[in-house]
Image (tube, rainbow, N blue to C red):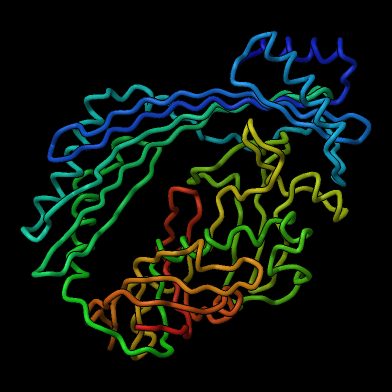
Length: 444
């Protein structure tokens, strides 16, 4: 795809004596439909395309981008990138290479998704809302009931001969509803992601969101103190997502990560492993290569409690004199950075429903808020708003009014005493099963 445009850019670069450049293009197509009271509230098609260039001049790096794919725009961004390279000081050592391809054939594009008719998506969105609204008389509103799908085309090439591209797509459905009992109102949220339209079960998603809202009604206060804590799979993934940046080698090298100087050290309980897997068969951020064209791989970050690796692009890997992990990331507008692919805590051996039975009493957390304002990635300290349940004798006893959970992320990893078997990925491709933490501070 876009062969003519890429040839044109490299021809212009050659005439300008730019011998070291790479070109990165992404094209995004998305659709979403939101239903309110069985009517279409919003109906969105979004298409965007952009192309970024990175130019290396005398070991200096410059970036520029365009959203117009024509000769004049290509000339402008190449000149601008070269100018930026002259003015931007950086200690980054950038080396362009023609990286090999992976051996594995990935299934990341599902053409049947492109064939699903708009009216089918609308009907499924209506089912999402109806299933939540009709579940119980206490459901008073369903402000969000949405079906959406997205397709991303990615292409990268450089002056060493590298030229790679791929296409990926997915579909999702989610519902958020409100339940009321007397003066108390609670919300419930549930979502699912798939590569298969039929696997997005509108009835199940809608009803599950309603169940979650209803379960939180009748909340009581909780006494402040230290409690064993169960994070359900979605909230465990939220916590991991909030602190995912600590695994970036760039953050480590710049002193912005609490994992600085902890490589090969024990930082978690023996039962804890964390993996980043860009080749994961069920992943929603699975890809054949990263945003430098480096081949994707599976990287064990923590294995049996030991920190084994950081996430690298070629620049940070060169600084540490190791190989990249294939986690280079950039938007066509931005500079090179590092991001996880499919980052997750693997399933443990304990059935998720049995976690309650491992301690006499505990608090289960099913909702977190204030992650960005209440979490410090350098110290690992966190203090977040939460909702959940007081559990005793192996079962939920009653919901708890909004409370605060506080602790330290590294201490939390060390105090995980059991891991469930219900791994689920969020919309950012970060996943976890439910986890039981020995204790954390709760303020009612």
